Amino acid sequence: MQSLSLFLYQLLLPLVWILVHTIGLIPRRIRANVLVRRGLLKRTAAAIAQLPEPRVRRVWIHCASMGEFEAIRPLARKLRARGEQVLLTFYSTSGPTTLLRSGQSVDEADWIGYLPFDLPWTARAFVRTLAAELMIVTKHDLWYNHLRQAHKAGCRVAFINANFHPDSHFAKPLLRAFNRATLANCDRIASVSEAMAERFRDLLDGLDVPVCAPGETRFDRVVERARNSEACAQLPAGFSDDHFVWVMGSSWAPEEELVLPLFAQLFERHPKLRLLLVPHEPDEKHLAASDTLLKSLGLRYKRLSHCAGEWDQGDSVLLVDRMGLLAGLYACASLAIVGGGFTTGVHSVIEPAAFSLPVLFGPKCQVAQEAQDLLVCGGGALLGGSEESGALLASLVEDAKRREEMATAAAALVRSRMGATDALLRLLD
Image (tube, rainbow, N blue to C red; front, side, top):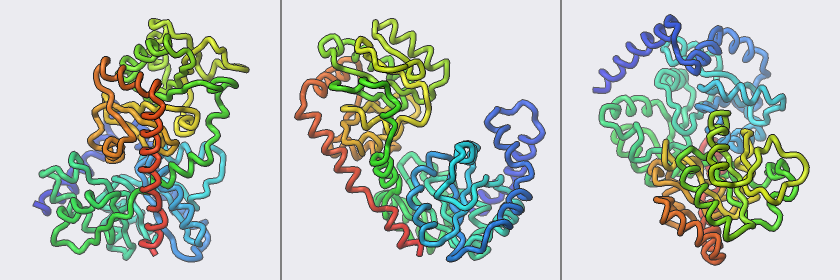
């Protein structure tokens, strides 16, 4: 089965590559990934040739996108601080574009680039060009040929922040043999929890791949960002003064359609309530729909981009129409509602928990272990139908003791998961 799965992968991948290069009607996101990779090997070789010889060793870190990179920033920074040269690659176009467009120096990397498509010959050339002694892949973006070529070249391969939830592709019977073959190229797997580490051990039974559970570096990064956040300075003066602020972060339409009417009802009884509404994708289509819903409920609001000077105390909702502020805005709040739990799956609940907030979210949270853990420890609660959600929100507004107990439990969970960065540094020596 393993040989067959590898044969099909190596056969089909070049065909897919040919198709995306020859068919004109391809999605914009795929087309962007194709365009940035034209001439990639030549550009990469020229850039690597300009780097000085590493003082200690050359470490190659690969992330799928900016979300995965955010989680390993402390690790990359500490690797560089001890003299290691860090090469950072992304699969998504968002990573390099975001970092390089910022115009700021990136403390976590000596070079930033894209990973080529996972063709055997391309992967071999790319691995030789980077000439790294250690390859670190974080979270999930495992590409067979790149891992295989790195392993064959004598480069140690570490898979960190490894997540193996029950619905993961690792658990799919038809992919089991291929996943075993891919993970067999790793010299170490560092999982986010002992339960997930045990699932990896079961999958890899009979293979000499050590598996451990040092935790997830995302907790260290979230706490780091919480301590240094300046996002609340972007809010109009007086918005949060002596008010009970909710943050609804990464919201989708289902959360807004459930929560905004409940907020409107509670606002009638508690006029000091304020809501920071932060859509998952604040494009004009979503913002216009939020506008319409807020107006239909009689809620006075403003978009952040339209605010000037002090906050009008007659308004109750601030619609955040800018990206990149959410994680820091939790510092201004007393309650967090995290979106995605009625659609694609709940988004990150760690950020609000790090700010000692009760965290509410929808029922689609099975793949987010930290959301499950918040429910168990009492730091989080599920939103459901309108009636039960209304009772939950009212109790958290009116019952300070319950709110404090949930906040304390959420913060304690985050503190208990810190330290993965330093544990990984020791493992990667």
